[in-house]
Length: 452
Image 1 (cartoon, rainbow, N blue to C red):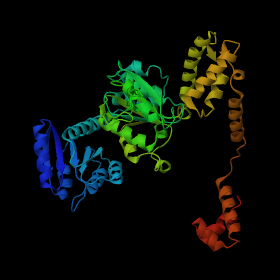
Image 2 (image 1 turned 60 degrees about the vertical axis):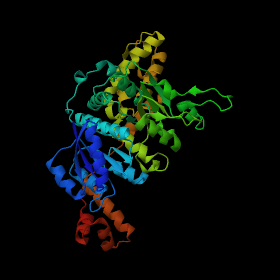
Image 3 (image 1 turned 180 degrees about the vertical axis):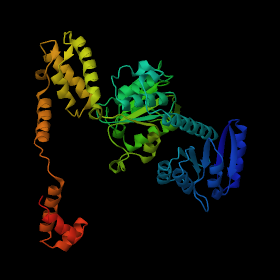
Image 4 (image 1 turned 90 degrees about the vertical axis):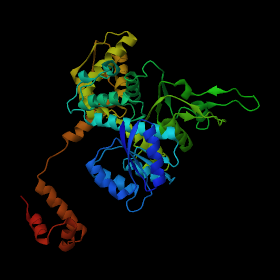
């Protein structure tokens, strides 16, 4: 049985929860009605999960969460409170809470959330305990990640993280720049999961007119006059499998709320219907944007975001792993040459050096396109610089010219020039200039006189 700590100043609530959780046969509860006792208790004992009220005298639930964060206590926390407030929910999740339930919570829902919190905690402990030095050899599902040519340690660690997450049914948020391979990682997670023999459905959140997307996604109920047939949505096509939803930030706020319900409860309803349906689907969502930034405060649900960020995977851009460029280029060369039945089988050293000097704003997708184009244009059996797009040569050479045009200078020359410009700005007022520079007037004078 799992140990659970119940913290609530309402004795009637804790009595009910204590009896219910004992009778479930899943939990061994400990009850605290005075939240001032929590800190000392957590120092002495370990729990698998904490059920925490927010609105309590003396020490609030937020205070408890803050103290746990400061002490790095990783026990998962589920909020159970009578306060229905989105801002409070978001704030509690920022402080580490796994979920936020409103009293009185449905008994089955409560057990489901507690189980998910424990599962998530165990998963993340296993990820955090992954050794620094990892190899593909340690992967249990090597085939799922076989189509990712890489020698980069960050990517191999990402594979191990993805494989760990794949072992659960928790939702996942994949983010990274355009072209980094978010859908490919989502497919690998599906292949490494118990759902591998079930459907994998990939969908762009901006693929439909926003007004039509809900019916396309959730399905459409029959018109009351019978003029419109009932149709299932794309969500039902992914039942028992994995649904990958790319560019999630393109969804309307209303759709985000409905999606959160699917992620949390597996419940949804078709358009023009009030009948609640159940779905068993693993949800993987992605974005090219940092949805936690202030830019998305008004357009992306904070509540949904902090649920998604619980299991997030960031794919590094290709420019941060340039050592993979030769491997990827050779891999794409083989595939693209087979497609067009050409005998191009190598890449010149000069071409590889040029590719390694390019920043690839569209990442792996762009590299594939460049190699595909080079294979088509190359007349010999080796890709040469002349077969690569001219914009790459121009950009790399321009960058090289800038670097080559740099003339190193002595540090004291640079400092003296900056001091003189600051002094000129303050019309030779040495006191003001020295204050702005954070030095004394005497130090300023020594710098000016130093012409070595």
